[in-house]
Length: 230
Image: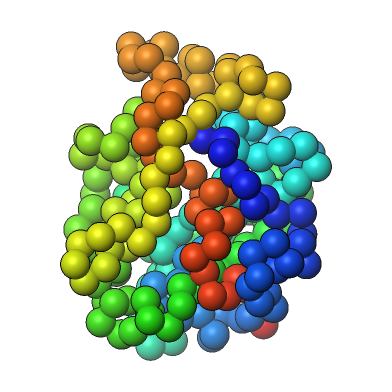
């Protein structure tokens, strides 16, 4: 899950690398079918046995901001909901405030939250409704511990890729060969134990996605910092 070419070093660097605008927005400015990315500093100490830590090891680089999760945002009037795939909930839909509680860090602060928006030609009302409707079809499915493209379960960026389809059924986001190894080329203990317990080989090189690459893919017209108090 490595292969990230454009990786965040902070708000200004991402804007410069991607040629995209990045400002701060509040809850009221979230639009239907925006994507919410969760980032943590590379030196932030997560539980070393956690999946988030293993994802950060495999997709981040030393000294950078590691993007560990992506979720779909659904706006209904004044309310904002999350549709995502997590180990805790599987594929589920729930309020943004619940999501913020789930992702609160050990010191009580929130991680970096980035709202990414596709260009206007891909965010017309019918397009956004299609993305949300597609995502809701997967609600209730298990989290994809196997990280495989051809089973019924979904992991976070896989859910996004399979939901964000053009009117002709084509994928907006590309898949690429996955790597589960850290920056030193080693397999984090979590992945080793997980796949051994599942009795399957590590899906190294299988086609897939990860939040880090998705945020840096260059397909977004805007990337905002989310200010939950704004």
